[in-house]
Image (cartoon, rainbow, N blue to C red; front, side, top):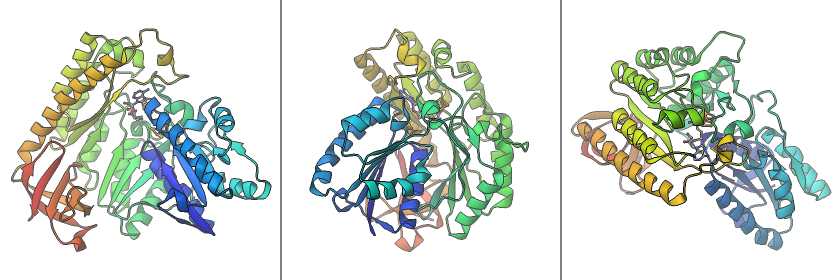
Length: 438
Ligand code: SAH
Ligand code: SF4
Ligand code: F3S
């Protein structure tokens, strides 16, 4: 019937949604192609968390114009977070008449109807639901990977951090029923998957909207008890709702990996308050101490924004100090990006680009040193690795991850891909480890 190409930007939520889009297209007879030029339908699945993401996507939309001119029957769809912003769909409609279908994050499942309509009436379709609907279960899906899978546990976000667009484009927080989550994980296990990443913008507030009394720690225990999935990971944790009960559940379960992604965003109480994060630096660091006490082997990662409106050199120093104290294994660092419609975009003391850049470089430098130092004690240690595939940097080697999510490369036969192996670490680097099969 035709070939499809989906280009997905943004976070794991989008990656997972892209698998649903792919599933829907396959169910309707389309097959995947790698090349935009070969496609009969192209879907750009957008992100708007930072301006840089949006600019990249707008550029890509522009590029597709000549493809449409060459092949008028080509269907181009733009969907996801970017078009969910107020007026974005209308602007896009006017700016890019070569786009056939514009749809949002809440109505991805309507794609087949839109395709039929475009084919029938040959007119531009814009359909963006302003509000989230009920969770739609059992949509088809074409998983990207055969070893690791994403499983949503909740959708949307109610936190409204003042810099962040996500709650506006992803709607209110909705938790999936535990039974649906368990069933999906069991199905994945039957399909030979060995690792699941549970997804939610704030996994720690899971269950608040459910009728049954169940929180995130209960969910972890239930998954551990009722599925045979060897490895369970989860993201993202929010310090406001993160608690000891969750860490104890990880410590007492066989499958939940000792890996916690706990975004701090900033180290200054003044900035944290302006960000509406709901915790102070000390409260955050107490959580880190608690994790280290109960789960000393856990790896810790974080997200940090530099240059939030009003951030002074002193505020930034607090961030560096917190980073040094928390000793993260890795940090995802961003320069603050103004998102229209969010409260922070209206704050008057916007920080200069050059200052943001300088702070980002300094922060990365400090973190890299810590990452390198934290990997060093692994030298000579035996670790269990789930083999994910051929190493990107060295095709003669395989690469996999430890339970703490560290990348390990080692020489071994490709038949081991998808399996667990023991590896002795022979060299430690900043972002990865080298080893030999044990
Ligand atoms: N729900 C998750 C992830 C949200 S988006 C969480 O709360 O951590 C991923 C990261 O993007 C955020 O953690 C934040 O560090 C960053 N981010 C979000 N909005 C941003 C903005 N306007 N400018 C720069 N970084 C931003
Ligand atoms: Fe954005 Fe904050 Fe929600 Fe994360 S918790 S998605 S940063 S509003
Ligand atoms: Fe981007 Fe939407 Fe995710 S804005 S970060 S794709 S939730």
